[in-house]
Length: 364
Image (cartoon, rainbow, N blue to C red; front, side, top):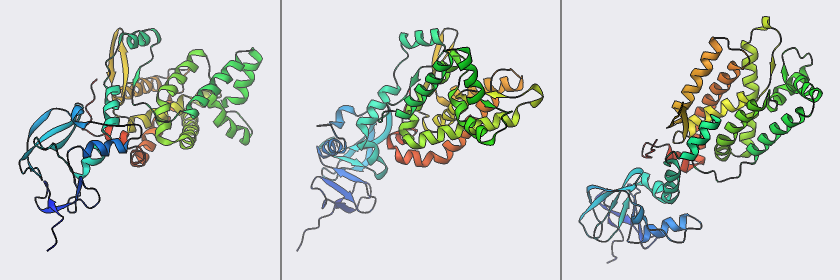
């Protein structure tokens, strides 16, 4: 009589574990959870990550939480609930006797990504240092804490270079600067439709002063790399330029024509849209905020709430010289696109998706 190849599933408590695909890994045909014999999980994680020769998940486990109501499939003793990582609260079941591990279906991807998760959480949970404090105190610019992108941000770097190049050419002479503003800046009095369309793109590369340029390029540099990594080079560029066009149209729609023609320059509208995307996809990140000498890491929603309130105040009090409507229009567009593309981006970037889960413990 043939032997039954199925073993007892710790979750279903039925003989539904099948090891036909791997001698040390059992797949439940009912709940699709996985049982790993001693050492099999480490091997599976190492094989999942190129360049990881060996991995010992037990060394990286978080605290033991409580005794599980599930029984080890071999020892038939209650297993122990462990937190997957110190700062990731997904729970897995480990046998104290044979070191076997049971993973529910929804836990498998998180455990397979645990080496990356551990490094990402280490980066995200760095404490504010005296260097970051001094940098922000001297520059008034925030310090970002986020995961490191996998791809080189060529588009972000190129955009920064082109903006700096245009500014540098304009700095050569007053005539060159005037030509750039008249021809590349967005002028509401432009008569030629084709020239106006060109200006909707070109104005994004023109800046009104050194601090205008530095401020915009700094924010583009620190958040553009992660967004470009999440979207891909082409999609990031297309979205950036499209956002700049829509931000300009928002400013044109709301500006007071009685005050004279509008001359719009700067990448602020495009970058404001990136703020919206960043808020929707990188909630685990942190940006530092400084009040006089006190520096605090803030979640993106708090940081950009403060930024939005400043812009709303500027717009409703008619503070001149700043395209408040372009800022807020770009930010609103970024939030909308971020919401519409969120599921696509998170499916494409599983690590970002996991860090967006409540299981990720971020210290700020």
